[in-house]
Length: 242
Image (cartoon, rainbow, N blue to C red; front, side, top):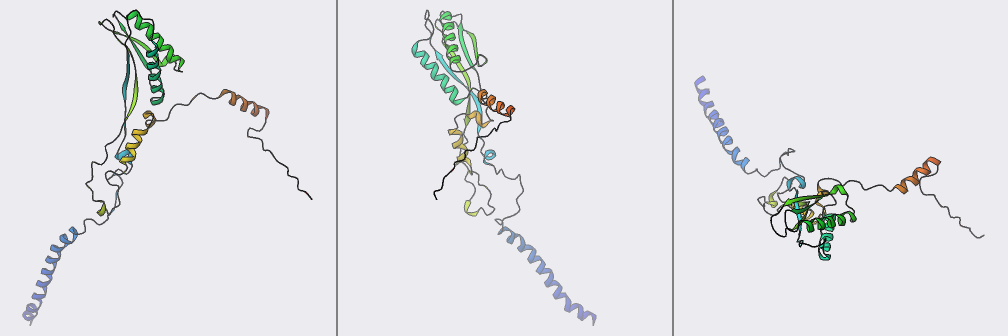
């Protein structure tokens, strides 16, 4: 009797074993069909901020102006003065006084004396434009030529824009996880780098301008007297006819 029961149960056990084998073989195939399903996202896997994904690189590069000074001349010519004024205005617009001017005059050349007179004219033009003595430096460089140029320079900030449109590896029609695609935000960063007037503003805020002493003294005088610091309220009376 026991042998008959054993013979009856063996086919059922075999079927169970084969069912498990088939199920284990099908699971990897089913998992491969679900590779695009949205899963959990961990912060740090991707850079979400466009400023980090497509950074703007700000560096300093020299801006130079060379002036030919003839031997025996006295200071700058009218045309050279115009070039110096234009050079100073470009510094003020694109650098906002973040770096200082360096005036390099030739030493040992035949036009050494004339170059020094021209350098002094350049310094006076800078002072009259609002620059301080500490932002101007006059140096000498050795020159063996007959008429070496007078060199004016300063370090200007330059914004290097990122390159966009280079990575289209992701199929946006199948981006089920709704994460930023590689080029997202790049055009905005590039436009900002191209349009910014003073690239130094991308590194940090500018220094404060001098205070208005007259206004501050007026407000402090009212505070000492106990007067109202705000604007006085004017009440307009309207007469209503009977």
